[in-house]
Image (cartoon, rainbow, N blue to C red; front, side, top):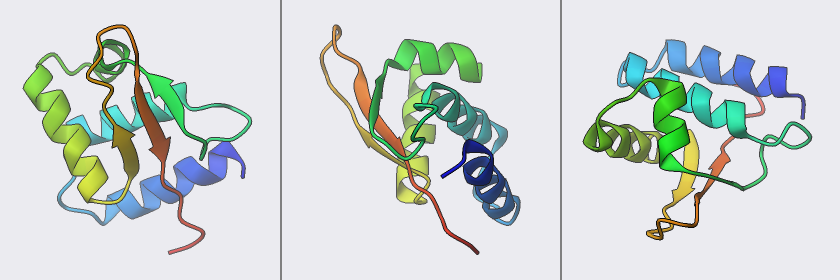
Length: 98
């Protein structure tokens, strides 16, 4: 699956999802940025600090709220590591067509 196809489908879906705020969009884009180029659907590890920096989210509570919303709304899967030295596991959920 091409990365452009994944992001195009996300933006089409997000345009009609009134629950999403700019912070959700920027967090998803940060997750997308760190996803593997060869397989954007694959699980990968990324730390909260990097995602917060790239998405311009400054509050840890806002980060956790947005991430949990993205999980509930069906945009990403997320497994926190609870270990300060090990990054959390994230993957993007893709849609074939809407």
